[in-house]
Amino acid sequence: MKATVSGKLIRILAAELYKLATLPLIRFSLIAAFILNLVLAAAFTNAGLQGAAGTHSIPHTGFASMRHLQAGFIILGILAACSEYTGGQIRTTLTVMPWRGLQLSAKLLALAIVTVPAAYIIAASGILYSFIMMKDTAAGIEIDTVIWSLTGAAGYLTLTTLLSAAISSILRRSTPAMVILLGYYFIISPLTTGILPDFSNYFSDRAGYYMYMPPALTGADVLTPVQGTGITMSWTVMFIAAAIAIYRRRDA
Image (tube, rainbow, N blue to C red; front, side):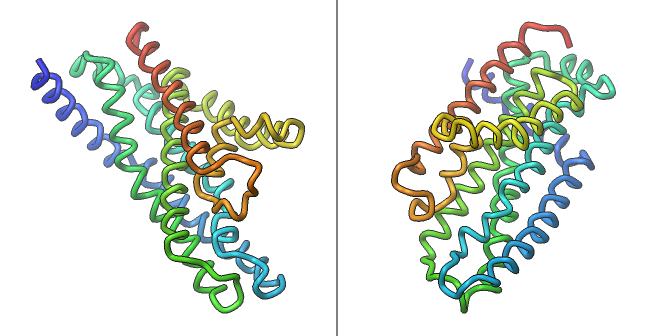
């Protein structure tokens, strides 16, 4: 039985990876995210260079674009989850692969496999640009801190992508998914942060901030990187579980 399930999962995973690789919008969203991050990194770095020497940090400047960059990964999750519903291809998928729980799990796993290296490269581009431009004026930085921060940033962007895909799987339509997700991340969350700063730290996006920002820059009275990771992961797992449960019980 285990071998059968494993074999099914491998075949479904290969099919889901192929679908992601051949979907033009996936490639476009990642390329657009890379370009956007470089443009924003240049803007924030130039702004940082206007400050006093030694008072700004490379991680803080290099990750200043993360709030905007996450939009590209939110859209990536939406496209990966909703693309098959647009033209009705989901019926063909479920006919060929009727194991719904495995199929959605494999889709999200394939999305994670694609997202992790992409997120790492894109996040690293901002840090690298800031380092090249600010290495003579910025406060000192250790390579261990950079690696830790990049790993946290890639993890946050990956979890955000999976969370967006899970919610989009529940909604099944890209337009309402974009309205809800982008509306939350860029309107509701900033308002909540200003009104209830302590409470907002337990939302996925605010908790995710502490995954990649060095503790020395966030303060001692807020979440630790481990706590931020745990909270963000909990939100993601909760919505993935809900998406799988709903997906298994409804019509295509």
